[in-house]
Amino acid sequence: MSGTHAHTVAFVRDTMLPEQAPPASEVGPVGWVRHNLFSGWLNSALTLVSLGVIYYVLSGVLPWVFQSVWNADSLSECREIMRESWGDTHGHACWGVIKERWNQLLFGFYPSGAIEGTSDLRWRPILALVLLMGALSPILFSDRVSSKMLILTAAYPFIMPFLMWGGTIWGPLTAAIGFVIGFFIIKKGALALGELVSMIIGVVAAVVWWFLLAPYVADGLSAILPIGLEPVQSRQFGGFMLAILLGVVAIGVSLPIGVVLALGRQSDLIVVKYLCVGFIEFIRGVPLITLLFVASLLLNVFLPPNTNFDIILRVMIMMTLFSAAYMAEVIRGGLAALPRGQYEGADSLGLNYWQAQRLIIMPQALKISIPGIVSTFIGIFKDTTLVSIIGLFDVIGLASAIRADTAWNGVYWELFAFIAALFFVVCFSMSRYSMYLERKLQTGHR
Image 1 (tube, rainbow, N blue to C red):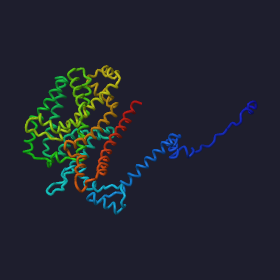
Image 2: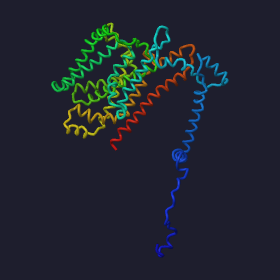
Image 3: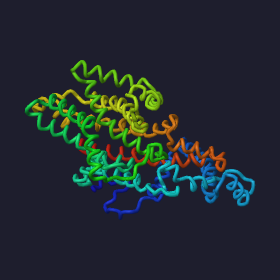
């Protein structure tokens, strides 16, 4: 530096200082707390108020959960143990009811071997649940699971009812043959007859097989080769297992129906469009409980005499239709969010309508609709508890039945806390998977 400017510069460093660790108050847990909880007077006040509320809630909940009784045969015995252990204080849970009745809350009246002369068949719904995880894995985690698992996915709709209801194996097999017949007619007839005509013929052929031929074929095969499982009646279904069963069927079937309804509502074919609009608006305008009462009480009135239409199957159909109507509107929102250029791009590539929907339009629309789709799934899963109103013993209905027992009359919080925990695990898992899927699909558009 020249002497001309030396008097104007107080200090000039000509060597680098060694690196030093950041202040302890800016990094680590202390830094996180300072920046996120006490960054200002308002933030600090809200943090202190929140901590006070959390302390107030936990000071009541934690002793209730952990200072509790697990081994008791009745509520009066629970209260006696509480009095001996903690005196005349309140706020202690009686988990003995869960320990004694967990089987009913999870499986309903599914045969457990408790009655003399019966077998324990609870392995069947457990196996169905395990296979469900395997069937869903190639769809939910397609980048991590082999596509060969799709064979299990395709077979699961026929394996699950066979495991749950039992009976002859030829019933599910003949039902699967109907889908195979329809698929080959549609695939092979598309070139010769056109897509629409081949689809109509394929659907008609499958329906004829299911309703006219399959019952006789199944009965004949059963007489020749009787292979099957011990039958279980629908009235024995119940508990959380029933909620899982209804939820899985409604969720799995309502999505493709919702896609078809959403496309039909945007169709240029007037008849198709107004049929879809009428269905969607009618279902959305009617409460679900009304549809369940129709399924329970009125549907048999419109069926031929002596028709045995399973109550659980009726409820499945109504819940699926209800969910599909909402699903159609969610997907229609995704379709409306796509720019016109995507449709024009598909046309410029020479794709026909179904190819454009399958390869370009629908993947983007479904991606946009993920939050709404998962919200609909969670909603319909929680709505499965409404079946207790029409006499089915789901987990809520069984909780009421347990409370009607003189041994457990007066138990409320323990039962509903257990039920809430079961539903929370499933719904929270769906919510977390939705967030994972959004992050995964978002990476391709950065």
